Structure formats: C-alpha cells, structure tokens
Image (cartoon, rainbow, N blue to C red; front, side):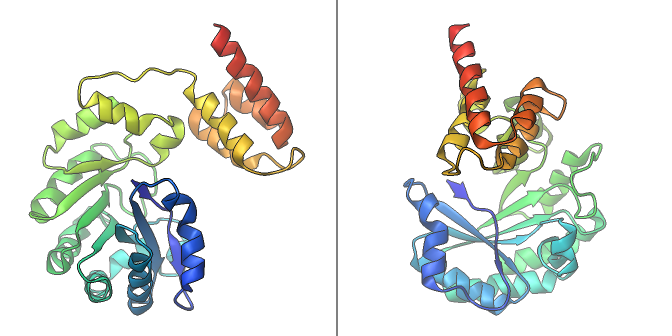
Length: 284
C-alpha cells in the first residue's frame, strides 16, 4: 500500500477538493492508501481524518516522529512525543471522527532518550491505535548511528503488547529484515523509507526474500531514475535537482552516476545520460 508523506494541518481543515487532489495519484494506482497528517491541533487533525476516510483512504496516520529542526521548532512531528497525553487525546478524537476506520501513529522511541518510551507506551495503550509505526532512534538522534539501536524494539514490543507494531529505521536489504526479525521476532512488520530510495525494488525483494525467492535486476536503479525523469513533466531545460537527490540516495555522492548526473544539470541532459547507461547495461 501507499504510505504518503505527511500533510501539514496548521491554520484550518483542508477542503475536500484539496484532499482529493492530494490523494489522486496514490488512489489512481488502485492500491490502499495510508494518509499521513501532521500538526498540533488535535481537533483539526481529527476533522481532516474524517474527510480523508470519506475519500476512501484505508488508514489515517498521525506523524509524531519527524525530526526536522523546522518541524520540531513549530512543535509538530517529533516534538509531540514530549506530550504523550496529546497523542492519546488526538487518537481518541480521530476515533470519534473516523468511526470504525483505520487510525495509526508514527513515533520515535523518545525525544531525547529511549527512557521516555514507557510513558509514551502508556498513552498508546490507552488510545489503542490500529498500527504503531516505530522508528528506533530518538528525535535528537536524527538519522545518525546508534549502536545496538534495534535492541530497543524489544522493549517496545513488551510495552505495546496487543498492539500492531511495525519497525522502522535502517532497513535497507532483505538481510536487514532477517537480522531485525532475529533480534525482535515479535514485530508485526517492517517499514522502509530511505532504503527504498537506494533500491526501488526493495519491497519486492523483501516480499520474495521472506519466501525464499530472489528478485534479480542490477540495472533497476538506473531504469527507475530514467522513468522518474521522463514522467516528471518538466521541460528539458529545467533543473534536474529532484533526480540528483535520488541519485545521491541510491549511489552515494562519490559514485560516477551521481557525478555525471550532477554535471548534466538539466532534465534533458539527464535523460540522455540515463538512456545511454540503460542501453549499455542491456547490451552487457
């Protein structure tokens, strides 16, 4: 299914037309949609959630995890973890607004320390969201290295008994899923984010890998970038920065493909380079 980026709810509840347009590309695929919202006003989030369910989403997810300094300064995202009672109240409000439809929450293990999690877990046990998406880092740890960080899932699993728990963070391969499952076999699922940017077929590889099958395709990353560039709708002379960001995530800042795409500068030159590389791989 789709799990959308967050929609910021600040000064008011979005009109149905705006929400419909926001969902259109996701719903056009026919896949279920988890629509993620973020804000500080529980009432507005609940009202937005009700409208999203009217438009056919499968679940409304409240983002209490984003570590962006700008977001945190505005007291949204990960800053909400400092107020577990707010999370509980907002999930209850969403229940009232959404009826028997799906409601979930995305969190981190704490704001400053993992020792904050028991209090957060207590709030979640009271409001009982349908799914808890948990990133093992604290907000202040951002995306930096945390030795033994996956061990934190064990504590979370014990404190969230009876709730569906999906683990997030540093899941970039089928092997990662296997290691995570051995560390915390009680997880109900895994969610990937940056790992999917590095490998567009990661979800498929995980799905088949769990069944003992392999998914081939060494050239898939270049083909994916080419498709993104072609389908962007941007003119040939437009800046290629969006493709460049994906290329950095996939290959790293020192890789030849990233450097060549950086040199290409615009969409037209980027498409020409990627077409050449895809043809070259097909011939090999």
